[in-house]
Amino acid sequence: MRLVWLLIGLLQSVLYCNGDCSRAILEFIPQAIRDTGEYRIRCFEKWPNKGSEKCFLHFVRKMNFDDGVLACRRVGGKILITHSYEQSELLRGWVEFSVFLNSRRIRPIWDFFLFSPFPPDYANIGCSLDNNDDKDCMVMLSSLEWCPVKCSERHSIVCEFD
Image 1 (cartoon, helix red, strand yellow):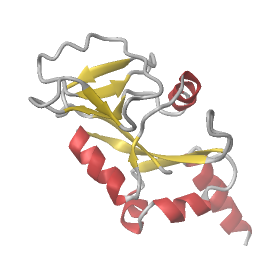
Image 2 (cartoon, rainbow, N blue to C red):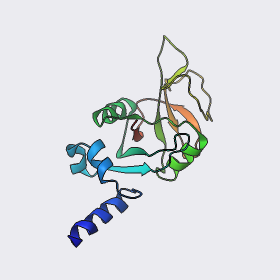
Image 3 (cartoon, rainbow, N blue to C red):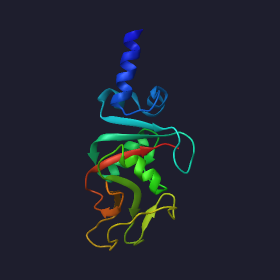
Image 4 (spheres, rainbow, N blue to C red):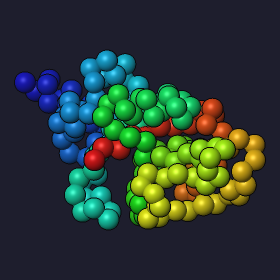
């Protein structure tokens, strides 16, 4: 029994969980992904602007936007969107790389970025939004600024769960 608790403690420290994340792991992560070990999960007990627990899944392997959408959909989540500076700061403390945000520009129909939800209740645009160079997806940099990038670029994927 002591070995079981030791393994659970090790798993939690590896996955950056606060407290017992076993419920979240079993609920959100399919067995096929759990077997690879190519993910980290984190549950924040008091998520800013929400006040209750919120869990996120970070895929270690970087991928393009469309693959990220599918990966999040497979685990019952969606690509991250932050709703405040405080939320962005918490995530930056956990994920040290640029991450795709749940936003895409649909051309030629729409020259603006479509956020989910739309319009966004928070944004921190730090780069030009000129509609050139096929930069139709949005990332949050480690500086917390949001910048357009090509959807084919590979960035970190963080899924959120409602």
